[in-house]
Length: 328
Length: 298
Image (cartoon, rainbow over all chains, first blue to last red; front, side):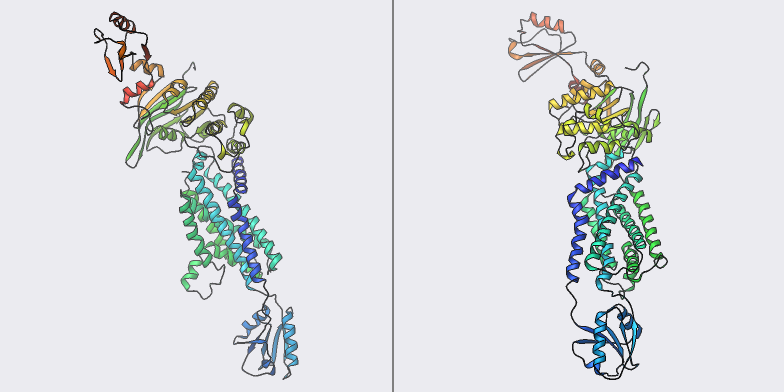
């Protein structure tokens, strides 16, 4: 325990003094977050969107400055109203319309509908908070930051130690492989969680994103996710001696993972084999679980599959990483 | 010296092969507690490989290493101190932080104040370890090797690259460690250093030990002769009637003799001018040259 704490302490000092690691670990995620804020905070277009079901006409449909979007599936369209993706849904055939009680734009469009004359339609109310792309994106960005920090942070430090002979010197002391690796893991885990919380709070202040689920559950998902990605970093760094090679391998893993884990865009509709392959990536499960909690308010049972998968992946990576680990 | 000689380290038939190279080729050694043992040889002789196998850093291809009669294990790691030839220090840490890091890895540790004092680290305790001079760095590495109050210390070419003053200071330090009864295993390619510090030496060449013993014994065993050296111009005409072998080169005449008195008498009888005559004992360099047929630093 004393040996573990000693290495942990030294590693933390080192991290704080290593300017480039500090910049990558903390400043990069913050910059990324500010970038999103600028892109997504530029305001929506002032155009009302109304969903229309059936071909039956209505004077309202002649209104100008409203975009009318035809729908076939009524329940899917209602969900869109719930999520503020359309401001109102109208079905003249059934003489009904749906609006969201929490949507200001829905309120305005309803006034226009009533003022347009024509047959009186029956009002149906739905509720639901708006889900924007940014709300969908936040869990992905949290996971992606975590992945880069884990793979590059752990990988580079250990490979650098091996390259310059610090590991060889440590091998001559009573320090065990497990103690050494555990200290590296815990140090990086603290860092990742601290940065994730910082990014989460910062994003929430600027973007006020959706969070319907339990903070504790989200915290658990992020910890498990960080552990699985750190373990993957250990696996990469188990033997490599050159930091150029380590950097190549880390890139070769992280970039496909970033693209295929559904960080930026949904993989729904992607070919089957890509979806299957994505299941092998720990980040996919982190992003899925975080999204389920934040957007759908999922409970522990609903994400138990992701939690179990992350745990198993962590154990597997750790086991192989420790087995393969070389001091020199 | 201990009244009861007891062996702290025993090495039996150690081999290390790398693809295409036999780095260490059947080394056996017994090292007694409290001695300063020197491993001497040119670069590439297998000194570092031998030491790193004993330290448990490199696995031998075959052979046995016994520390206090048992294979080196956890106990050995706790009780040994190591200074590599090229030890890297963790980046971004100061001298004192580095000492504390290594101190924290051992169950037992020397008080840092004493260590800082002994190794003279006081002036640069809060300096980044990457900004130390060669001598300062070697002293810090030695302090790290001593941080667990080891019973046995390995120093792999500790003074290579130091200036003569720093080297002398380092020797003083090593003597003070030896005075506490710590066993020291030192590798060097400086004969002078081995002669100065070591109670016993083993000379290595091409992965094998070619001679072993105390420096005095080794010299005595291999050389009963002295060298007498004269400038050529001191001799008028042919040098005759000298019963010992004569070697002449570069304006010097070298006579190898087992009896200095009679050789000088013979020279006097010849009327040789003796004011520039030198008599020299054989040293380890000569020994090495004789054993291997090559210059040590070549």
